[in-house]
Length: 260
Image 1 (cartoon, rainbow, N blue to C red):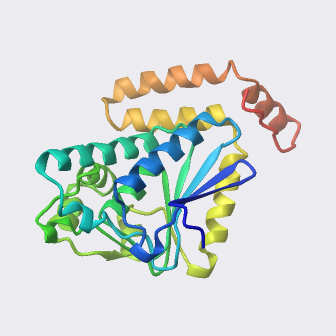
Image 2 (cartoon, rainbow, N blue to C red; image 1 turned 90 degrees about the vertical axis):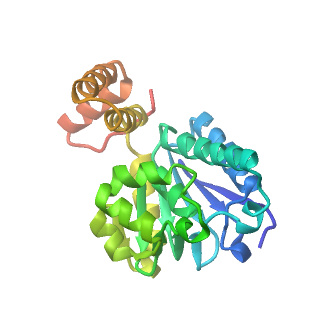
């Protein structure tokens, strides 16, 4: 296996970014956070990339959390900088403007679950375990986990998962809305690949408008969200893809979106 911290592969318009620390269960240290941030900056800038799949290498974990060995050496000032770096990465993913799918096999704990929650869609294998166990270290999630968990599953479940710190299985995670779908482990990669390809075939500007409208709407009042949606809807009418999509519908054929 390569010694590279990240393994990046393009499959047509789908870019796969894989954290490659299987011996550490893909734990997040500063180097991993910085490498992921650079990788997502590159994906944002590359017009050929229309969707991203994020995963961890190995069968045991997506990401099992932050690197505890590195955490124990941090001063409060260094911890603040580490938290800000993690939050910067999560915001970069969330605001990428291209759909990001987390492929969750094995453990997605602590910083790993925070990383998954920043992705737009989460597909879990049936054996996946998800949780925020920071309370057991005398800590709280520092990469945005308290805020995104609250928005995904609601206050009661967010408090249960963060105060208790116990992981939950994929089935309960799906019931809570923490993951979108649970599939058999041997079908996980195929399911994620097919979903990513469908998204990559969609109109890029419309994808970006949907992502931004939902993210903005989740953080503002209803009328502001409606105003943003109307403006994004109107802008779509300036794109060639909108003309192609409506024409293809009327002609009863699959659309061929160009991204223009």
